[in-house]
Structure formats: C-alpha cells, structure tokens
Amino acid sequence: MRKRSLLIISLAITLAVMLTGCFQGGQSLNNEEEIDPPKDAEAVHHNDSTGEQNSDEGEEKADISSDTVERQLYLMDADGMIAPQTLELPQPESKEVASQALEYLVKDGPVTSLLPNGFQAVLPVGTEILGLNPTDNGQMVVNVSDEFTNYQKENELKILQAMTHTLTQFKQVDGMKLQIDGQPQDTMPVNGTPIGKGVSRTDGINLLQPDSVDLMKSEPVTLYYPSVQGDNQYFVPVTQYVDVSDQNIYGSMINALLDGPDFKTNLQHVFNSQTKLANNPSLRDGVLEVMFSQDVLQDSKKQDGNKPVISDKVMESVVRTLTQDEAVEAVEVKVENIETLFNENGKPYNEPVTKQKFMETEKL
Image (cartoon, rainbow, N blue to C red):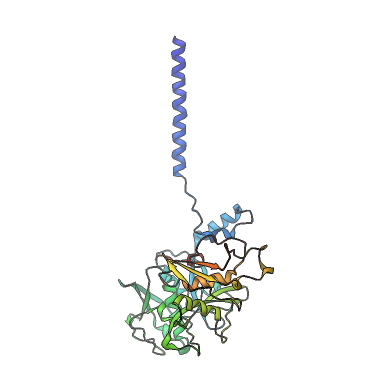
C-alpha cells in the first residue's frame, strides 16, 4: 500500500514538472518577435522559382529595410516630363517623411547619387524646406527658402506638379499651398501661375491638349503611358481632354488609351491597334468591369503555352488610369469569350486588380 502511494506521488510530481515545462515553453514563444507577412503579392517577386527565399538574401534585405524606406518622388525625365520614381531613402530620424521627400526633389541635393538614368531633380539648387504645416482641409502649407525662386519660367508648372504629386502620395494630403520665407504666395514667383487657393492633382500633370478634341464636350483626365530610359521602365501620367459625348467617362478614358499617346512624346503605345472595348465599363461596389475584344491579348507566340495573356504594361496602364477616380477601388479586366486571363509570368488574374499592386499610398 505504501509503495502504491509513493508511486502515485511520484507520478504527480512528474506530471507537474511536465506541465510547468509546457507553460514555460508557451510563454517563451509569446515573447519572440513575430515575422511580418508580405505586404502584398508583389513581395514574392523577389523569391526564387521554388517560392523559397534565400536566407542570406532575406537577412540582407532586412538590414537594408531597417536603414532605408521606399519613397515615391516625382522627377523630370530626359524628355522633360514629370514621372514617379520609387527610390530607397534613408529612414528619417523623425516622422517628417513629407519634408524629407521634398528635400530629395532639390537639384544637387541628397538625391543626386540616387537618380535613375536620364532623370533629374526639379527644385532649384540650394532650396531649403523650412517647414510643413498641414491644414484641416487637407492642404499642406510648404514653406521654402528664397533660393526656390531661381528657376526658368518654362519649368514653373513642372516644379508645381512634382511637389504636388510627391506630397499627395500621403493619404492625409489633398493639395499644397506655398510660402517663401514665411510669406504666403498667391502666384508662383517667376511666371505668375495662380496658386492662392492651393494646388492639387486635379490641376493635372504633363498637360497635353490634342487638336482634334472639342473642349465643350470634353473633360480633363490623367492617363498613364509607359516609357523607358535605358533599363528603367516606368509610367508617365499625362493630363489631356477626352470626349465624353458618346459614353461614360471610364469608356472615354479607355478609348484615349487605345488611341495612344500624342505623337510629339516618346511615350509607348502598348495596345494592339485592333483592340476595342466590347461594351461600356460598369462600376459596381467599387469594382469597375472593363471588357475588351480578343485583340487585346498578346500574340500567341508570346503566350505561356496557349494561355490567354494580357500584357503587363496594358494591365498597369488601365489600372493606374482608372483607379484615380475615388469611386474605383479595383479594376476587373475581362476579354470576350475568355474565362481567365494570365499575366506575362503565367499567373492568373483571379480577382480584380487594385492600384496598390503598382503604387502604394502611405500615412504621414
């Protein structure tokens, strides 16, 4: 009987020790740092073909990400057009990320060593960002030093556009106002462009006005066209008037993309010449459905097997262009008599595409 009691006591002690070890193990797991998942599908593009990331490469990227941050800057390309470029900037010590972004628009400033081929900064040499003050109505008041006034008049709109679009990448910023050495400006200092009420993206960028458009029946929209400088492929926003007399604004925007960019530019026309809209685009619950004729598909010789492939440049042009409308959260591109579309890497488009796939917005 005594032996049986001793055995029960021994088992109880053993069980208690095991349970204590389990609880201690669980606590230590909770104290470990969690691994962040990829932000979106684009994060896996850096992985190898097996889907597994090389551990050394992952450690290197972790080190880089701790010291730098991706920021979208609007710079001037070799053709004199303002276009977004995503650059790795040093992680700011404070939360003044918008101020840092503007500082990297200054010629001969810290952006110099980071400039992509053919690109240049737009703000005059020596310009200092003296302060940024947000207002309740979404305007950002930018105070710059007097060096800001040292630019050629033909660059005035480009400077305004670059500053405005760089600032409005941040979700809380809808537009900007300007001060020079603390003095509010109603006009730009060199060519007198009115800016008193503020400047926003609705004022346009890289403005073009086709001769054939009837302005009485048209509306200004911003379209995205691909361009290339060496190995650097990027998209250029262009504001132009489109005819809206025969269809909704979305259909007009698509037809303008199908017509291609103005011949005076070096922008690329990426649609097959026979491509047409199969019907008027329709918006439902934030998703805009756009259906093309089969001519939009890539040449069969370029397709992955016999999969119906739509060019990545076509998809990006369409999504970047249409999601500028706040009502459009995503775009579902379809093709007549085709069930599933694929990108150039053979991946299916199983859900509508959002603009975050190509460009992210960030909180200040």
